[in-house]
Amino acid sequence: MLIYKIAAFRGNSYFADFVYVQCIPDKPIGLYKHNKIEIEEHFNKYGEYREGFGVFKRKFISSQEYHDGFALIKGKPVEIEGAIFRTRNMTKYNFIIAAKFSPYNCNVFYRDSDDYFIKLLKGELEFESFVTWMRSFPKNMTDY
Image (cartoon, rainbow, N blue to C red):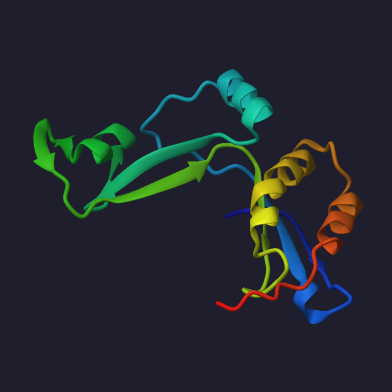
């Protein structure tokens, strides 16, 4: 990850602390041809654009090959048992780091945070407004 912005927020109580991280887009691995206009349109509509691929014995394989369980390696079909699936963000992206028992570790945050994160990336929301929203979460009383 290449960090573009980072902000630490210290809440009124220890459980409300979080770190906001915004990263620049990852570089493509070279398996696919990406259309910049398509990426931008997808980002504007969904707030992200990701590249999925597999890694098998230090070789990149397409997402389709990964899901099929076979890949063409040196022109021959090879079963790729043990391959690992990875993604890269072709657009800027963001997230927070918070404690396990923070108020942000809840269904409401999971459900509603995408809208806030996307608006932050697009410059449609001031960070102070994001912090105000974050302050609205009560202490997480859930036992795990």
